[in-house]
Amino acid sequence: MGKLTTVELDDDVVEYINLSIKKGKFRHLKEFVNYCLKVATIYTIDEWDVSKGMFYIHPCRVTLIPSDALLLLMKYIPEESRREAVEAITSCLKPRLRFFRLSPRNPEHLPKILELLTLHGLGRFALNDSETIEVAYAVLPVEVVKELLEAILEVKLEVLETTKVAYIFRIVK
Image 1 (tube, one colour):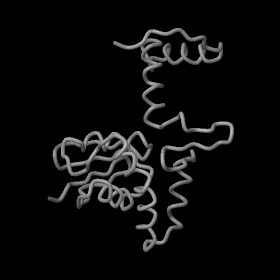
Image 2: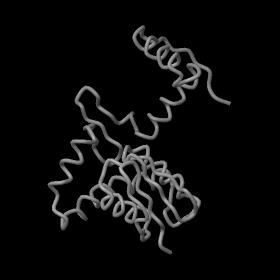
Image 3: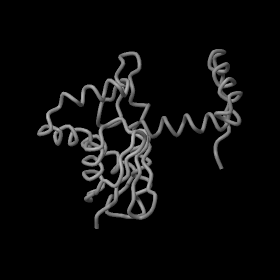
Image 4: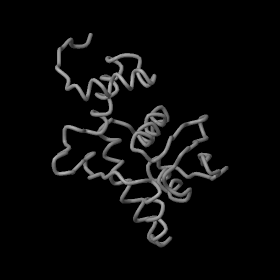
């Protein structure tokens, strides 16, 4: 069983929560609080120094930028340097896998790993079946997403389909 506690919320926070509930994003305060605590745990918010604008999802510092800007920046990375960019991203993600005790070699962990990628804002990653991965709303080009998934999951992928909304990959065994 959980812990029952009492907290005093600022008026503007209560207004925000009530608006979220009214819009149907959450059914009640408990659901809102549980969601916030899940996000705080996943993103290790206890390590953030908001007053300095320094946010860490260990071991990497993160920043929030519009995805359109990210795509523009990616265009300036030469193809031969793309591997370095992917390695920089995976160097932040692999410690998160260890933190949550997830192994890409364990097929049962694959859905959780894809959920973690989703929670890191790279797009919505889903396992359609045991060998098909769909990435919707990706913030990176298909080539980069493919290389990123191959590095994180330690597999080879084949691109099956690319649309404006989604990329579909098949895991090559």
